[in-house]
Structures are given as structure tokens and as C-alpha cells.
Image 1: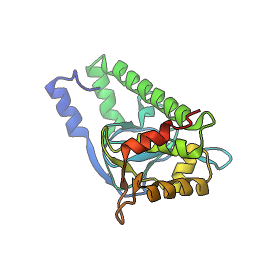
Image 2: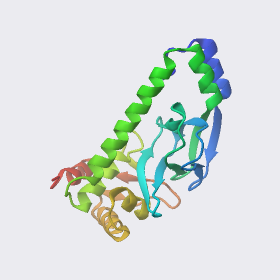
Image 3: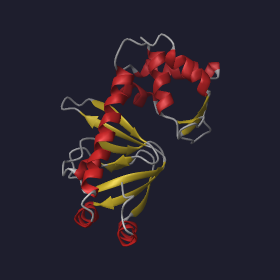
Length: 216
């Protein structure tokens, strides 16, 4: 997004970034709060949780390293979901004031920001459609989710989510989520994480087979 900035403009960005360490389960920002910064995840993962008027909560996206959170700031909207650290997280925070200064310096930056926001929206829609639509069994949907939770492309490690989080993403019961994860561990598809770890090892080939079986 900042690829066309001149060196002095890049210096402005670097000088305004806050490098933050967020503890596991801490809230980065709350749904409904005034958006005042854009965040880039450097390490760890963040879940975006949208709360309904009826008290329900739904995880609408997982933000992984290299992804942006707080894109609502680009259009001046309130944050439409709460951002919560899954495990220990490192993020870079770019304040709204700096973004506004950059947009006055680089006329094309605003358009690139909107394109980035559009990409994120498309990703969120794809995320929900792939994981919640159709009549695929819970085992297949959990496998699909785990493939999307890889720490990086090609990695054999996936971010570990609580069964309640998996249930909130897929719209299944916590008991069902727990049962599927336990079965994957027994069969060796997943290797149980070390104590205190927020990642676990997956057999990618077998996980892909699970995700593609009885896909409809």
C-alpha cells in the first residue's frame, strides 16, 4: 500500500508507527469504538468478533501476520468488530493523523487504501461463504478452517483456536468442535500443542483430504 512513497514519506510512516505487544485474549479495539488507527499484524493472530444485539458473538475473520486490521479507519467508520488477540501478538499501529497526512502528500494512497479494504471485504465474504455455507459435515468444515489457520503459506503449523472459537466461526456446537479436534489429534492429523503454545502441527496432506471429502 505504501510502495510508491518517497523516502521522506516512508520516514514519516516509520516515525509514526507504534510497535505494540498484546497479551493473549486482550482486546486491541472494541466494536463500535471510533476508529483512530490502522494495524498491521507482525506476529501471532487476531480474531475479529462481531457482537449482535441479542448478545450473540460471531468470529468473522482471523487476522494473520502481514494482514491489516482496523480498515474501517480508511472510511471514517466505527470499528464494526472487536479485535482480540488469540495468543501473544505483535502489531504496528499507524494513527489516523498520520494516514491523513500521507493522503494529502500522495494522491494515489487513498485509492490504494480503498482497494486494500475491498480485498479484505472480499476475503471476509469468502471466509464466511466457504466455512458456513452448504451442508458439509462438521469434520469437513473444521478441516477447511484449519487450512485457513496456517501461520503462513506452506507452513505445517496452524494457529490453535479454542473449541468455542471454532464453534463461533462455523456455527456449530462447542461439543461438536471439541469432538472433531479430538478425533484429528487421535488420528495424527493434528499434533497436540506444547503447553502454553498457540500453534500446533498439522499433516497438511491429510488435512486437505479431510477438507475435500464429501465437500457438498
